[in-house]
Image (cartoon, rainbow, N blue to C red):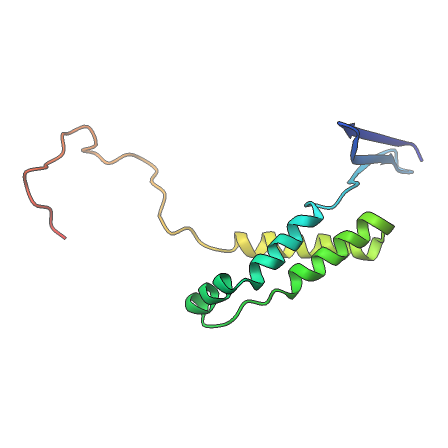
Length: 129
């Protein structure tokens, strides 16, 4: 196997290896986020203001355990290059991205502008509400 590394400012960003089928497989050599970001998210999740806001909005207290697990998995990945921690962290990030993308947009996007977009606004007339 032939390995190729890409370094930016001395930090290993990703590495590529050539497989037996002569295809290049590139992988990230670092966690998706900085590990301190997971800890910051955990602290924010546990804060009184966030717990109050979440309870007011959703009627339940937030579950912050996933942020804590992600932090420990990230540390494990950085220090010991644990493959199990790496896969758990990547799975968690994929779930987080999928959860964020499942919401429908609030506004319907226009295909064309309104027909009367070029006319002056009727500021003197009261609008129907």
